[in-house]
Each structure stands twice: as C-alpha cells, then as structure tokens.
Amino acid sequence: MTPVLQAVRLGKRYGRHRALADCDLDIPQGRVIGLVGPNGAGKSTLLNLSCGLIKPTEGVIRVLGAEPAANPAHLARVGFVAQDTPVYGDLSVADHLRLGARLNPGWDGALARRRIARIGLDPKRRAGRLSGGQRAQLALTVAAAKRPDLLILDEPAAALDPLARSGFLDDLLEAVTELGASALLSSHALPDVARVCDHLVVLADHRVQLAGDVVDLLAGHVRITGARSDVERLPAGVEPIRVEHSPGGSTAVVRAERGPLPAGPWRVDAVDLEELVLSYLTRANEGTSRPVPKPTEAHR
Amino acid sequence: MIWLTWRQLRVQTLAALAALVLLAVYLLVLGARIRGAYDDTLARCAGGGGCAGQLAAVADEYGGQVDLLGYLLLAVPGLIGVFWGAPLVARELEAGTHRLVWNQSVTRGRWLAVKAGFVGLLGVAVTGVYSLALTWASGPVNTLLNNRFEPALFGARNLAPLGYAAFAVALGMTFGLFIRHTVPAMGATLLVFAVLQVAVPSLVRPHYQTPVRTTVPLTAPLISGLTKIGTYGEIGGLRVPGGPWVVETTEILDSAGEPVGHTDWYQDCTNNKSLTEMPACLAGGNVHVDVSEQPADRYWTFQWLETLLFTALAAGLCALSSWRIRARLT
Image 1 (cartoon, rainbow over the protein chains, first blue to last red):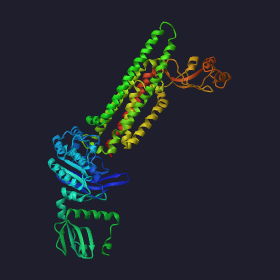
Image 2: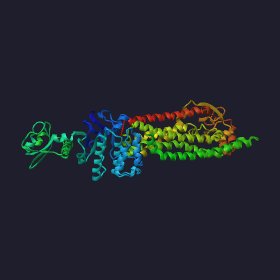
Image 3: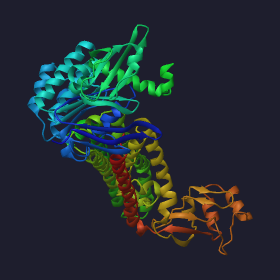
Image 4: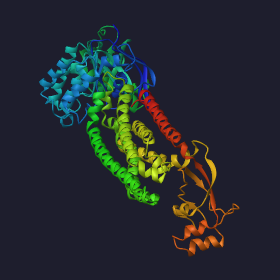
C-alpha cells in the first residue's frame, strides 16, 4: 500500500530562515499520526507542505503517493484544518456546508448535517460568532465531510479549554474511524497526542528527532537506573538519549536497537510516551543551546 | 465556486447594481430632456437664422452636468479596482481563509480565475452600462461642442471605460496577492490607477498614430473659445473646427511665422482692450498657430487602441497573478 506520507531530504527555507531541514519520513496508511515538538520546531511547516499550501525548497514530499495539491482529485483526498481553524466570519454554518458541497465532488452531506446536529450548532448562526471550540468543530466537519483519505489538523485543539479539548479529540477519533482515514495532527500538548495517536513524529530544531509507531517506540526504549559509572558505560547497540545524574545514582532513557537490553548492574523500567518524547526534546534542546559535550567532559 | 464567489460578494454586487439602476434612470431622463431641448431648438430656429447661438445655449445649459457625470465615470473603474479588486485576494490572505478554501477540491488557480472572472465581468458590465447611458444621454451636447476626442471626454465615453474597468480589477487583485494586506493594496491600486489615468492621455495616447502637423488661422471665434491667452502669446484650450484632438500648439505666430508675443500691437490687444474686443483685435493681426493634432476621424481607432492597451495590461496582470498563486505560496 502507498505510504500516507513520504519525505526524502525534505526542507523548507524562508529566505535565510530555515523552517525545516533534512526531513525523512515514511509513514504507512491507517495511522493516527501525532506530530509533536516545541513552538517553532517546524510542525506547521511540515503540515503546510503535506497539504500543498507551501512548496518545499529542498527534497521531495509525497502524500498518498502524489505531489500534494497537484490537482482537484488529489485535493479531494486530503482534508486540512489549518491552525486557528479559519472560517468565513460572515458566512453562516449552513453556508459553510454548502461551500463544502459545492467545492467537493465527494461531499457527504448527511455526515456533515449529522455532525453539526450532534455538536449542537445552529445552522443559521454566522461563523464569526462561534466560540473557538465551535469553530474548530465546524472546520473539522467541513474537512471530514469531503471524505478524505487523510485528514491533516494543525493544532486543532489549541484554542479549546481542557474539557472541550477532550471532547474534541474523542470526536476527532470517531470521525477518523468513521471515514476509515489516516490522520496527521500536530500538538504541543503531549497528553493529547498520547491519547489519540498510534504513530509519532517528534520535531525539534527543524529536524525529525524520532518517528515510528507508538508500540514500537515504547518497546525499543527503556529507562535504566544504576550507579553513575555503570550508566555511563553502556554496551554497544544501546544509545543513551537523556542521562541524569544525582548523588543517589543515575538515570538514563536509552534506545536498545537490538532487542531487550542485556542484564546488567542496573534496574530496567518501561518508559511512557511522555517521558520518551521529553527525552528526545531535551536532547535536541541541549544540542542547540550549548555545544555538544566532549567525551572528556562527561567523565569530569 | 461561482456560488461561493456570489455568496461572498452578493451584498456589494446588489448595492452596485442598485446604484447603477438609479444612475441609468437618471441618465435616461437627462438624455430625454437634452434631446427634447435640442430638437425643439432646431425646430424653432429652422425658420430664421441664428441656430448656432441657440444650440450653444442648449450645450451650455447641460454641459456642466454632463461633465460631472463624465468625471464620475472616469473615477468608477478606479473605485471598482480599489474596493472590489484589491480585497478580492488580500482579504482572504489576511483572515487566513485561503487555508480553508484552498484545501477544498478546487485548485487555487481555478479559484482565482473564477473570482477574478466574476468581479472582472461585473466591473466591466457596470462601467459599460454607465458608459453606454452617458454616451447616449450626452450625445447632442458632445455633437454640438465637437469635443469628444478631448482627454477628459475620450476616457468617459464609448469603449475606453470598459478597458479601464478590466485593468483596475486586475491591478487591485494583483496588488492584493503580492502585498497581502487589504488597505495597503487598496492604496497602491488607487495610486497606480490615478497615475496611469494622467500619464496615458498625456504621454502614451498622443503616439498611437503619428500626429498631423497643420496650421490653424486664429479667427475671432476661435480666440474667444480659448481657455488661456498668455502674456507673451502662449495659448491653451484651442478647439479646432471638425473636432480633432489638438495635442500641441505653438505660441501665436504672424503671417511670416514669427512669434508675436513681444510685439507692441499684441501687448496693446491683450492689455488695453476689453475681453470682448480682444479676439477681434488679435485676429486683425492675421495670426495663426502651428498645431500637431490627431484628426477627428481617428477617434474610433484610438478608442479601440486604448481599450486594447488596457485589456492587454489586465491580461498581463492576470497571468502574473496566476503564476504567483501557483508558484510562490504563502
């Protein structure tokens, strides 16, 4: 099956400013993909590249096997909810559904009406008067009712309060399941991603730090706790991601590429997704904010 | 896509059409009155002589009104460009709604083409109806004055306004797409359109065809029709019989071709005679001016060329916008 998203050495520059660099991705279909990273890491850039709103300055991107937004047929296969969920302020909710129906050959009017009724939006209400959460729901409805194969959402829950947020994410999952589509959503809220995503892409410093199915990622990483000297001397094939020393001992989140970690003078624990992502983000942050520590420094 | 464009623009479209209907009714009434007065005058003076004077009175009576309506028609394409053209894309970019609409199953090239086509056709139609009504209503007055080739009238009658309208919409849209902010795009549109409306008649239009050089004897009636008689023989506003467009005139010359501005008799005519005596006094000197003019029978050639020029500019801007929206995005 064609990958839902494929990127080879993908990069985007705005003049001298680099927004995304050396991005290699190969994500299979049928996933709910979470894109996480700090603000300014390049999340929106990657999503805008994916839906064809912008074009790459380096490398190649293929979405559902083709160049994004190349023609109406491909546009019909990708639904996009942009950041801040833009809607036409002076058009009503019903007008937005008519817009969707007029501009999309595969429009599912029944699905759209059902969703609007369930959310409890008044079709006559002008979109400019909706709350942030209602606007996000309307934008999601317009994107979902064109029955895309891939639904892309840029920080869809950012404007919502915690309660609305959890409702919105449930709703999103339901929509994706109903469509039988893949979804790609960005968020800087790790719990949101942990809740709905089964595939993860971690972006920091304009680069992909980590990508893979959540199950595989959790299976491939562990936290070890032990004496500092032991933690600093790991066997081959075990890569430390983030190491913390304290007087009582040291903790490291490590990637064990070849199966389970061999027994050693340490305790091995499973990591959760949040800790895993934070470890990678911390590493990326240390890499940029100060020079990479030399090996001798680590032993001081 | 056409539905969406209509839905977004229906308020301003209906307002424009309402204004146009009012204006057209006014022009029909005005035209009927001008034609009535013209025919009455002709019928009354047919017996005795002196038609010219009475007809001139008719032209005088309605000339001011017709002029004002003409100036309004010169401004209409500019207003359309500023208020319809500039916000067409800029407003979407400003509100971020382009990110919603560009991700429906319609390519943005088509999106732009439909929007530009809708507003462009509407703008051209509104301007065209206005121009048609004004050209009809003011017909007798312009025939009497024989001045339709003059810049202020040339751009406000017949075909030329249609070209201006198409150009103004394209100009506004292009500025909106490149500047990405509505108000600056409106300002830029207004500025460029106004500059072109001055620059084209004075710098470009005179050269559509090579002007004809000729000599015009200054008779007393011609002198009394001038808008300016300078201290040293410069003149302005020369209206030559037959209705050519006088592009350039020399100062007043005597029969030997020498300027008369500094001679004693010229100074005597301009300084010591009353305004009513002066034309006859100057004409007595057997004076003339050399002019370069566009003959009256070139009027329609010029109308077509002017319209084509602005339509071509509009097409160029549309091509530029189309390239821009596809190639350099967001």
